Amino acid sequence: MLGKKEKRLRLVLSAVLLALISCRSENGAKPAEPAGPAPPERKALPLDAATNETLKFLAGLPSGSESYRPLRETPAWRDYARGIEANWAAVEEARLKPMAAWAETELAEPFSSAKTVFYPFGGPDFITAYRLFPKAETYILLGLEAVGNLPAFLPMTPAQVEGYLGLMNAALADFFMRSYFITGHMDASLPQLDGVLPVVAFFLAKSGNSVVAVRRADFTPEGGLVETPYPSLDEKAGRPRGIRVDFLPAGTDAVKTLYYFSGDLEDPAFLPQSPFFRYLDGLPEATTFIKSASYLLHYGSFSRIRNIILSKSRYILEDDTGIPYKHFRDGWKVQLYGVYEKPIKDFSNVDQPDLADAYLVPAAAKALPFSLGYHWRSRKDNLLFIRRD
Image (cartoon, rainbow, N blue to C red; front, top):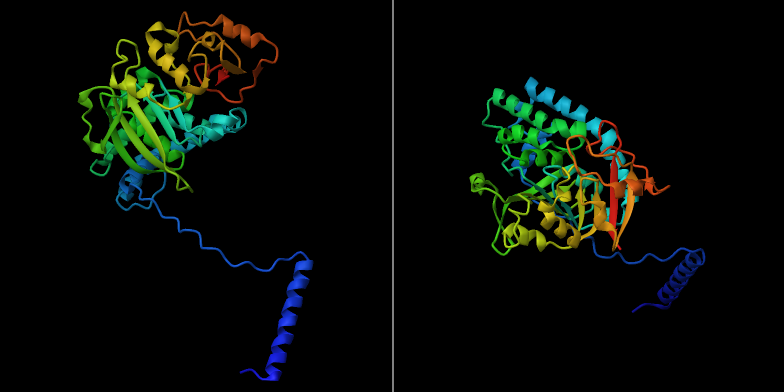
């Protein structure tokens, strides 16, 4: 039991403590609250280490991999890496950075909220869609070119590696110079590279992403997807064929997904009963991006994919090579950017007088602070941001 002195001492100490707490409260300070539970430890996602080393090598990026060290010390890879660094810095400054800053302001809604980005006729051009809509969860790219495979560099001789890097330079040259890929040039370089996947992988690595997994994607008769291990695809089976890449942006733990499908979108091949049609027709609402599309959507023979785009898109960002302006008279709002020029000489009978007239309306078009498309020489580019009304 406590004696009288001990009880009096305890009462005095209690009074002093209460006075101190009261004084701190009057001065705006709050008593310390009990600490909550510690935040859960962030678990590192398993990355595909071998694939990521291949991506870094393709992108001319440094790596601590001992396996690749002999190849990185060759003059061929060093020259390749220096050239890639210079070309990438130039395209960042002239195109990618201004484009991303523009998109954040002018495309504010889809920039921040788009979940699925659909890029038909885009081929391997992942980077443009990614910079325009960096917060999307899924990117779907379509092209005629075969999916292919990533290179196996380690069994190659230095001469073989040098030859492959030369092919990568050739495949990327049009993108660096023009912002798009020329089909004829891809037909010459991509078969030797073994498809578009090396170029897609290059863009993933250069944009700071790491690969979590690579899977093949094939269609069921009903339009679903069957995913199988990456090396299992026999390209001789023909189109359509696809690939799924799950990737992780630097500094996050939110995995994103990129699909690339090789398929023919012209009506005679793109039949309503085909698995490819059923898959695309079953997509959720999307933000669609179209550029440098050879004006294919102007022709009646591409009516089915045009109708899917119109029915599935909440937002469409396109240049004049996309869906003709006349399709957006009712139920859509259109904001014009840049200037309208007649199509370059490679394309005929695809002029749009109504679009030209729309650009002539005072203050109808806003400035476009970067070049993107077929008018790369003159910089007289256009973009249309179209939203469902």
